[in-house]
Length: 448
Image (cartoon, rainbow, N blue to C red; front, side):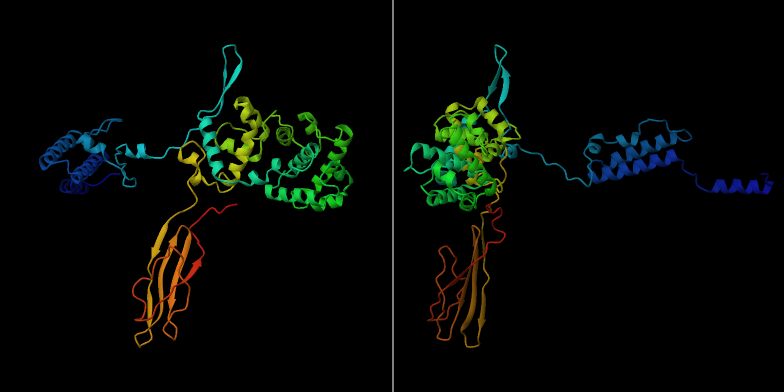
């Protein structure tokens, strides 16, 4: 577009009077320098003389780079004014990590490592199973804990339910029937069912009475156990098989016991050990399977896999005892739901890799809330005293003044705090009335 001479002269005058525009390169240099200047001034690492020197260097660099394009990858001299100060710059959103003196790691609680049994090749190439480390220590500590606590299996286990007054053949039969009834049933319920059979079967608890009893009556006697309808059919069928194939006694082999309806490998091994006194395998209960996996002795998905793993390295003299040991341990401390790791010695000794924080909160909390109402004659009408919360028990103490100047009520429980302040009238004895309230929020993880 052609312009007049007057327009061109006017444009020259305007360009001469207006300040020069900064290019993109010049503007970035100035902005970077301003940001670095502000950061260094905030950190207190740049003195006034250093700032003047940096400013003059930046001005020379800016002047020398006028009209030149910024090269790709060229370093910016302004950002390297103080490399040490720039290295400690942190994001405002992240809290700085404090230097640890090592005490926390030394004093911190470390969980036990998972070290299961290992299969290694022996000198002749055969596989040898190496037991888990510290398994003997875990076993001994568990046995010591079991001695201090009586579990249901100690008094109502299948091994102890047979009648001592009966013949050895009848005691073996009663042990087998008790094991059949114990499937998916608690020991307390199994004991009640066995007592019903011993007291109500005609002729006593023997094979002949099981053959003669009607299925309806048998089902009624064992009606409290789990799956009692199926177990009634199993017991009647097993009684016929014992009469026809085993001369009225229970089988003395694992294969013979497993051939009976309703009898699995666990029952067979336990029956061989309890009835015949021969340890031909480990009877793995759900507690044995669960607890040994929690201890990381192995990683199995079924009780049969657990039995094979344990028999590969556990000494044979412990095959019978480990079932009784772990069943009682699982009934009292290592519960299926709500494990009491706070009461377990294995958790304190860092021997259980599956230990969790204790769910039982033991704390003592005291609150003093005193309320005194005056009836105008200087007599105390009512006073609310201290509320004490101790080990999951909340105790509330109140005192009330009746017409004759005495307070009706009961003595406070042992351990309850006295009334706060002087709430008794002169010459009028004050007795405490204790109300024991629910311990909401003080104890979690109730027993299941």
